[in-house]
Image (cartoon, rainbow over all chains, first blue to last red; front, side, top):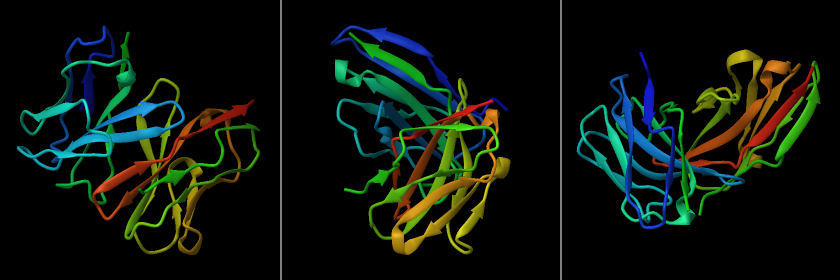
Length: 115
Length: 112
């Protein structure tokens, strides 16, 4: 079991460029999440998907879009990157269909820098 | 808005010292409580969680946490830390089963 995998590990963008962060899990989990981690602020939820075909906004969704491609994959897209989106992005998954009470399993993170 | 506060940004201890990391959260209805740990170069992983029942929760690697509802607190403790406990620790609160909030994290350095 690879658990939760994320690609790429590192990325540097120029302001205005677009990119998609990929996340996949092989644990047959129903829910998937995207967080960003900034110094001194902990993790903040961007979007989540409680089940295949559904997505919901989290605490900081502005500037991002997501796609739950299938049960395994959940991608995060930055259409027009801004320096304020420089952060470490974590994908997570959990078995329960919804954030609920279940333990979340995290990927290794993607470090994104926007110049 | 809901919030989670971790009082200590960086804690430095010697091996065998006792540890207590504070976590307080704002009132917001039903809560489920978590402590996650991130060892250097590794993924976040769950240390322990509280959903209901005995407010003293035991987790992996000798960690425990106590839920004190009247104080809105969920402090993490370990009687005797080891060098391998050096990591960043995050308190997290799930509000009403759909709103997950993390604290800013506490970096623990254990000196051998």
